[in-house]
Length: 98
Image (cartoon, rainbow, N blue to C red; front, side, top):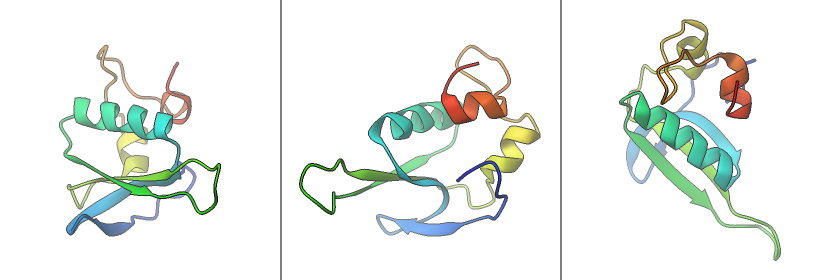
Protein backbone atom coordinates (compact mmCIF):
# COMPACT_ATOMS: atom_id res chain seq x y z
CA UNK A 1 0.00 0.00 0.00
CA UNK A 2 1.34 3.36 -0.93
CA UNK A 3 1.42 5.98 1.79
CA UNK A 4 -0.57 8.17 -0.60
CA UNK A 5 -3.75 6.12 -0.12
CA UNK A 6 -5.18 5.58 3.36
CA UNK A 7 -7.84 3.13 2.18
CA UNK A 8 -7.97 0.15 4.51
CA UNK A 9 -7.81 -3.13 2.58
CA UNK A 10 -8.80 -6.41 4.20
CA UNK A 11 -8.11 -9.67 2.41
CA UNK A 12 -7.39 -13.30 3.07
CA UNK A 13 -3.98 -14.97 3.10
CA UNK A 14 -3.86 -18.73 3.64
CA UNK A 15 -7.39 -18.69 5.04
CA UNK A 16 -6.64 -15.93 7.58
CA UNK A 17 -8.30 -12.51 7.32
CA UNK A 18 -5.63 -9.83 7.22
CA UNK A 19 -5.03 -6.17 6.66
CA UNK A 20 -3.16 -6.06 3.36
CA UNK A 21 -0.08 -3.89 3.83
CA UNK A 22 1.34 -4.10 0.30
CA UNK A 23 0.76 -6.35 -2.69
CA UNK A 24 2.56 -6.99 -5.94
CA UNK A 25 5.96 -6.36 -4.37
CA UNK A 26 9.41 -7.89 -4.86
CA UNK A 27 11.08 -10.38 -2.55
CA UNK A 28 13.42 -7.68 -1.19
CA UNK A 29 10.54 -5.34 -0.36
CA UNK A 30 8.60 -8.21 1.20
CA UNK A 31 11.59 -9.16 3.38
CA UNK A 32 12.04 -5.53 4.50
CA UNK A 33 8.36 -5.08 5.41
CA UNK A 34 8.13 -8.47 7.12
CA UNK A 35 11.14 -7.67 9.27
CA UNK A 36 9.90 -4.17 10.13
CA UNK A 37 6.37 -5.29 10.99
CA UNK A 38 7.55 -8.22 13.12
CA UNK A 39 9.91 -5.85 14.93
CA UNK A 40 6.76 -3.91 15.85
CA UNK A 41 5.05 -7.02 17.26
CA UNK A 42 2.65 -7.60 14.37
CA UNK A 43 1.88 -11.08 13.09
CA UNK A 44 2.79 -11.07 9.41
CA UNK A 45 1.25 -13.24 6.70
CA UNK A 46 2.83 -13.60 3.26
CA UNK A 47 1.42 -14.83 -0.03
CA UNK A 48 3.45 -15.55 -3.16
CA UNK A 49 1.96 -15.05 -6.61
CA UNK A 50 3.78 -17.17 -9.19
CA UNK A 51 5.21 -15.37 -12.22
CA UNK A 52 2.82 -14.96 -15.11
CA UNK A 53 5.53 -15.44 -17.73
CA UNK A 54 8.84 -17.22 -17.92
CA UNK A 55 11.74 -15.09 -16.73
CA UNK A 56 9.63 -12.94 -14.41
CA UNK A 57 10.01 -12.98 -10.65
CA UNK A 58 7.17 -13.97 -8.34
CA UNK A 59 5.30 -11.15 -6.61
CA UNK A 60 4.43 -11.03 -2.94
CA UNK A 61 1.55 -9.81 -0.82
CA UNK A 62 2.19 -8.89 2.80
CA UNK A 63 -0.56 -8.65 5.40
CA UNK A 64 -0.91 -8.49 9.16
CA UNK A 65 -3.50 -10.28 11.26
CA UNK A 66 -4.39 -7.07 13.12
CA UNK A 67 -7.52 -6.07 11.18
CA UNK A 68 -7.51 -2.49 12.45
CA UNK A 69 -3.88 -1.85 11.47
CA UNK A 70 -3.48 0.80 8.78
CA UNK A 71 0.11 1.36 7.61
CA UNK A 72 -0.54 4.96 6.57
CA UNK A 73 -1.83 5.92 10.00
CA UNK A 74 0.88 3.89 11.73
CA UNK A 75 3.65 5.75 9.87
CA UNK A 76 2.19 9.25 10.11
CA UNK A 77 1.13 8.82 13.74
CA UNK A 78 4.71 7.71 14.47
CA UNK A 79 3.66 4.34 15.97
CA UNK A 80 6.24 2.18 14.18
CA UNK A 81 9.89 1.86 15.19
CA UNK A 82 12.97 0.71 13.30
CA UNK A 83 15.10 -2.11 14.75
CA UNK A 84 17.35 0.66 16.12
CA UNK A 85 14.40 2.22 18.00
CA UNK A 86 13.99 5.23 15.73
CA UNK A 87 10.58 6.39 14.47
CA UNK A 88 9.68 5.04 11.03
CA UNK A 89 9.39 8.01 8.69
CA UNK A 90 7.65 7.98 5.31
CA UNK A 91 11.09 7.99 3.66
CA UNK A 92 12.19 4.97 5.66
CA UNK A 93 8.95 3.13 4.85
CA UNK A 94 9.29 3.80 1.13
CA UNK A 95 13.01 3.06 0.75
CA UNK A 96 14.09 1.06 3.77
CA UNK A 97 16.62 3.66 4.93
CA UNK A 98 16.74 7.19 6.33
